[in-house]
Image (cartoon, rainbow, N blue to C red; front, side, top):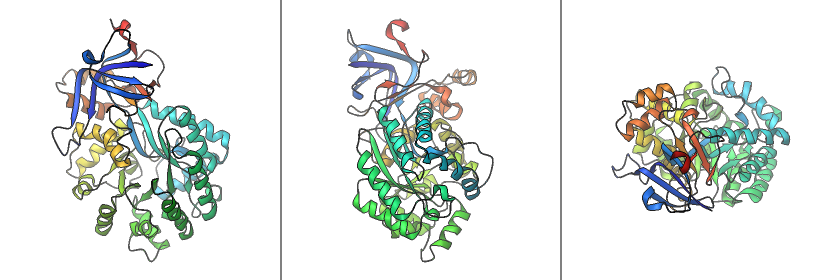
Length: 437
């Protein structure tokens, strides 16, 4: 059945850092949806017709749903765990929590709660690290598939330098990953990401297995971590003595390329930056995590100046918020510290079409182009009294977006649509045309 979703509609077709002609905005806009897909977008007057079901979100803004290209499914209960740097934080909080995901019932319960948090914050697609247990990935894919929600995920490969309960072996990590790829990759909206956690927790033998999976499945994403913390870098290089630098480890095993998502990528050497550019690999900026763990400042404009495409992500649970709005706010501050700027149009492009480009999925998600999935977020720039007070002085779309970016969180998400279906219950932000009058 067709339906019309009405509101103030914003869609990007180019990067605001490249051209002034980068977006389309309809003050009284609408999106025509059928069977989870966008049929058309434009002025309400051009798309409305008698008998067509209509949901009216005016005066809220409707954008493509947010995309989160780096976060950790098993860490939803360790977010906001008190202060430590990366390696201590992993050993104290993360690995014990991830050990519980060997239990399929626990993993299944957490999968539903994980997806609930994503959609409550306006995120409609995520790239997720599961635990080292096959059951964790099966649970997440099963839950996302039931909701027709696009998910890129993978079972973590890790066979050393962690508690035994979260270790696998080179062979079991290969076998489990291959089985998950066969069962889930391309099933509905599910995509598999080959997932060596990082070089510290993978032996050379396991890295060989990750490379074999990449060679055997060239269309798949690969996700890992790179140069997040200086102690991490030192430990990594002590384990791989022949490596020229951290990135060289992944390069040696054939893991780089346009589908390689390199979480953090903060403390990069010039040679590493050259090689990331040459291979078209994709760094991912995780601002709230980088601040919380004291990791460092991501050089967004420096990498962009080399022609490198980067994503921006929450990194829950090292990241301190599920909200891409909060993520954009903290990203803005990190760039400010380096004399770099993030215009609000740039920010919202990055969290939608920009992250879709990072994943190579821009024909499926991240825009409102006809044929795209009807994954939408409805935003209220006056969601809180403080935001409403500030909004009284806003005179442009960019000013409204900046209010959302700096002051917004899940309260600003009036509704989220996944494949054309609303995810939030209740009347807020969701009224029929008749109710609007």
